[in-house]
Length: 379
Image (tube, rainbow, N blue to C red; front, side, top):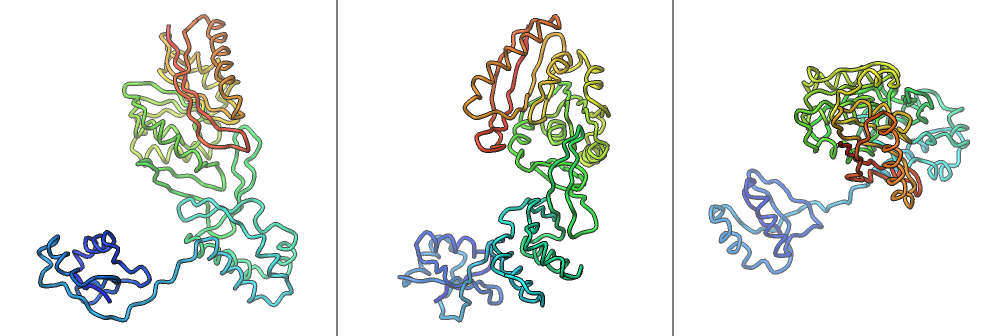
């Protein structure tokens, strides 16, 4: 049984059916000319009259009929779909392999950046997979990567690699399918663009990017000491409405992405980029800022003095990112304030320094939190 209603009223009628417990989820709605057939069950004898009371203009265009409707088939979640597609790919191979062992080692998590999916560094690197790949043609491997992309609804595929342990924290993504790693994202009204094979992007910091962008920084001069591609610089420029932002960054690939983002968001007139080691660039920004952002992990402590020196003589704000063992967070806050007070005295400022807010961004590792401490310095 189905109730047929004009298309323009179908959403309202469907909600009424849900509220009355009459909607039949087992079947799919069906369009018939300019009406939609909504599957129903239960006591619907007075249904048409009840709907007309709520939607009078539907009076002459509502009816209940017996129709052949398709049965809903539950959609596979991406992990199930990936497993199914990889299983089919394995069946198509003539090489000898243990399909069950191989399927047990397919990735269960990934990161989606626009139309690019990044699978973990360990994905398809187990000895059984490497042995299989040694017998595969490149075209066969490409078919596998395409199958994975289809299951994740993307066009390109990359494999994560550990971030380089160098000053520039270079990304080492291996592109498996696609011509390049350039990605463009829109996050909370802010445009980002970057090459995922060359620079790092952390989707897990999204809540902090939103939070920092929600802080009113109108008429403020801000220094972002570890700007990267503009993870925090761009939200502060676009949404916090800073008067001017000084971005310190050493990686030329990140700077290219930051410049693209500034132009895309139409904020380049309020941004100055200082390229190079921020131990040098920060030293050239003394006494100019109302706020200094220190968005580096695991610790930014080595530039705390430079950050305090960037603030105007009357004081200002620091936003300190850090990885901290969960149970040690209260003591870490106290130690951080004490260290900042000592630094303040050493540089002749002797400010009163207060911890105003602690934000727990995410779990960085078991028992270790990525936190941000908002610190206010004043005479």
